[in-house]
Length: 131
Image 1 (cartoon, rainbow, N blue to C red):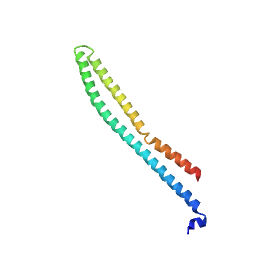
Image 2 (cartoon, rainbow, N blue to C red):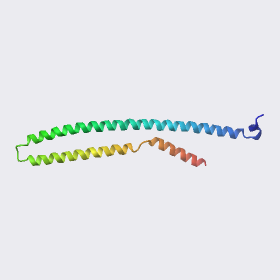
Image 3 (cartoon, rainbow, N blue to C red):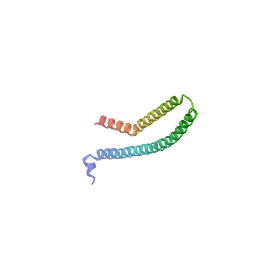
Image 4 (cartoon, one colour):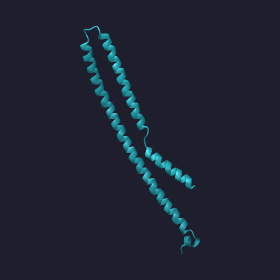
Protein backbone atom coordinates (compact mmCIF):
# COMPACT_ATOMS: atom_id res chain seq x y z
CA UNK A 1 0.00 0.00 0.00
CA UNK A 2 1.41 3.40 -1.07
CA UNK A 3 0.64 5.93 1.68
CA UNK A 4 2.00 8.89 -0.27
CA UNK A 5 -0.37 8.29 -3.11
CA UNK A 6 -3.30 7.80 -0.72
CA UNK A 7 -2.54 11.09 1.02
CA UNK A 8 -2.06 12.94 -2.28
CA UNK A 9 1.56 13.72 -1.52
CA UNK A 10 3.12 11.77 -4.39
CA UNK A 11 3.25 14.81 -6.72
CA UNK A 12 4.61 17.03 -3.97
CA UNK A 13 7.39 14.53 -3.15
CA UNK A 14 8.21 14.14 -6.85
CA UNK A 15 8.55 17.92 -7.26
CA UNK A 16 10.80 18.17 -4.20
CA UNK A 17 12.91 15.25 -5.41
CA UNK A 18 13.29 16.89 -8.85
CA UNK A 19 14.19 20.21 -7.23
CA UNK A 20 16.79 18.53 -5.02
CA UNK A 21 18.34 16.74 -7.99
CA UNK A 22 18.43 19.96 -10.00
CA UNK A 23 19.97 21.80 -7.05
CA UNK A 24 22.65 19.14 -6.68
CA UNK A 25 23.48 19.33 -10.38
CA UNK A 26 23.65 23.15 -10.20
CA UNK A 27 25.90 23.01 -7.12
CA UNK A 28 28.19 20.54 -8.89
CA UNK A 29 28.39 22.86 -11.91
CA UNK A 30 29.25 25.82 -9.69
CA UNK A 31 31.96 23.86 -7.91
CA UNK A 32 33.43 22.78 -11.25
CA UNK A 33 33.42 26.39 -12.47
CA UNK A 34 35.13 27.58 -9.28
CA UNK A 35 37.75 24.83 -9.61
CA UNK A 36 38.48 25.79 -13.22
CA UNK A 37 38.81 29.47 -12.30
CA UNK A 38 41.06 28.60 -9.36
CA UNK A 39 43.32 26.56 -11.63
CA UNK A 40 43.48 29.48 -14.08
CA UNK A 41 44.28 31.87 -11.22
CA UNK A 42 47.12 29.65 -9.98
CA UNK A 43 48.53 29.34 -13.50
CA UNK A 44 48.47 33.11 -14.05
CA UNK A 45 49.93 33.85 -10.63
CA UNK A 46 52.76 31.36 -11.13
CA UNK A 47 53.53 32.75 -14.56
CA UNK A 48 53.50 36.31 -13.21
CA UNK A 49 55.93 35.42 -10.41
CA UNK A 50 58.32 33.71 -12.81
CA UNK A 51 58.18 36.61 -15.27
CA UNK A 52 58.72 39.23 -12.56
CA UNK A 53 61.78 37.40 -11.26
CA UNK A 54 63.17 36.82 -14.75
CA UNK A 55 62.53 40.40 -15.82
CA UNK A 56 64.06 41.74 -12.64
CA UNK A 57 67.24 39.75 -13.08
CA UNK A 58 67.65 40.60 -16.75
CA UNK A 59 66.76 44.26 -16.30
CA UNK A 60 69.23 44.75 -13.47
CA UNK A 61 72.01 43.13 -15.44
CA UNK A 62 71.27 45.06 -18.62
CA UNK A 63 70.89 48.40 -16.90
CA UNK A 64 74.03 47.95 -14.85
CA UNK A 65 76.07 47.18 -17.95
CA UNK A 66 74.47 50.06 -19.84
CA UNK A 67 75.15 52.45 -16.97
CA UNK A 68 78.73 51.33 -16.78
CA UNK A 69 79.21 51.75 -20.53
CA UNK A 70 77.75 55.28 -20.49
CA UNK A 71 79.86 56.32 -17.51
CA UNK A 72 83.03 54.95 -19.15
CA UNK A 73 82.17 56.86 -22.33
CA UNK A 74 81.86 60.19 -20.50
CA UNK A 75 84.50 59.65 -17.79
CA UNK A 76 87.04 62.12 -19.10
CA UNK A 77 84.55 64.83 -20.06
CA UNK A 78 83.11 67.75 -18.08
CA UNK A 79 79.60 66.23 -18.42
CA UNK A 80 80.51 63.28 -16.18
CA UNK A 81 78.33 64.48 -13.24
CA UNK A 82 75.40 65.27 -15.54
CA UNK A 83 75.57 61.80 -17.09
CA UNK A 84 75.68 60.16 -13.65
CA UNK A 85 72.55 62.08 -12.58
CA UNK A 86 70.78 61.24 -15.83
CA UNK A 87 71.56 57.56 -15.30
CA UNK A 88 70.18 57.73 -11.75
CA UNK A 89 67.03 59.40 -13.08
CA UNK A 90 66.68 56.74 -15.75
CA UNK A 91 66.94 54.04 -13.12
CA UNK A 92 64.25 55.79 -11.09
CA UNK A 93 61.92 55.99 -14.10
CA UNK A 94 62.50 52.30 -14.83
CA UNK A 95 61.69 51.36 -11.23
CA UNK A 96 58.47 53.39 -11.31
CA UNK A 97 57.42 51.78 -14.61
CA UNK A 98 57.99 48.29 -13.22
CA UNK A 99 56.10 49.16 -10.04
CA UNK A 100 53.13 50.46 -12.06
CA UNK A 101 53.10 47.27 -14.14
CA UNK A 102 53.18 45.06 -11.04
CA UNK A 103 50.33 47.02 -9.44
CA UNK A 104 48.32 46.70 -12.65
CA UNK A 105 48.85 42.94 -12.74
CA UNK A 106 47.94 42.65 -9.06
CA UNK A 107 44.65 44.48 -9.70
CA UNK A 108 43.83 42.04 -12.49
CA UNK A 109 44.51 39.15 -10.13
CA UNK A 110 42.15 40.75 -7.62
CA UNK A 111 39.28 40.09 -10.03
CA UNK A 112 39.48 36.34 -9.50
CA UNK A 113 36.43 34.08 -9.58
CA UNK A 114 34.36 36.67 -11.44
CA UNK A 115 32.31 34.05 -13.29
CA UNK A 116 31.61 32.07 -10.13
CA UNK A 117 30.55 35.19 -8.23
CA UNK A 118 28.27 36.25 -11.07
CA UNK A 119 26.67 32.79 -11.32
CA UNK A 120 26.17 32.54 -7.58
CA UNK A 121 24.69 36.05 -7.55
CA UNK A 122 22.26 35.11 -10.30
CA UNK A 123 21.33 31.94 -8.44
CA UNK A 124 20.74 33.90 -5.25
CA UNK A 125 18.49 36.40 -7.06
CA UNK A 126 16.53 33.52 -8.59
CA UNK A 127 16.10 31.85 -5.20
CA UNK A 128 15.03 35.13 -3.57
CA UNK A 129 12.56 35.69 -6.39
CA UNK A 130 10.94 32.31 -5.82
CA UNK A 131 10.66 32.82 -2.09
